[in-house]
Length: 185
Image (cartoon, rainbow, N blue to C red; front, side, top):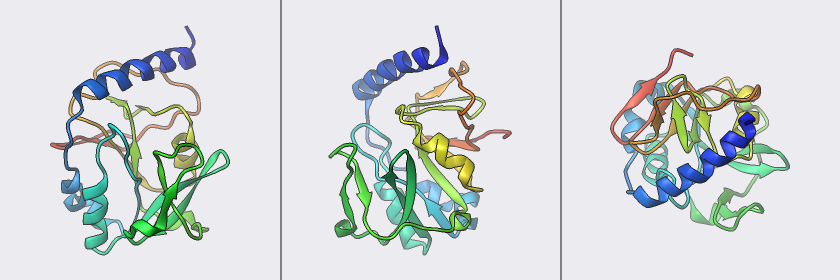
């Protein structure tokens, strides 16, 4: 079985498991971690459905004076738009009406982003993640020289290596509501 086929099967299974066990947790504690404290510009996202909730984290980052950037789908890539926290700066994505994306001008100098918060279905012990399958973050991460952390629910750290393809990018850390697991990457 190819890595792509295996990933597709795992996504179906992990989405089902996440839906069955979903509990809303806060990730706002991350805002006080050393990596977040040092960063001045942070890329995050607006969570939806059963994803780990980013609302409190995003609010805490804005409250602490960080520049917060959210992704907007731009063809096959992500564009990053500074967000003030105002709901009228968000609109439904062209990909899915469930996804909210920022409106406004996209950032042109990606080097200002120090840290990126990444969605994931699972993350293994080496920092590789299984995302939703669009490849947007695997294309975005090499363009940023930012420390990367994936948000997952408590039971979503994989004890076995996830299938990988040549374009998959490892993260620097994974976060659950209770801990930050830093990888040697």
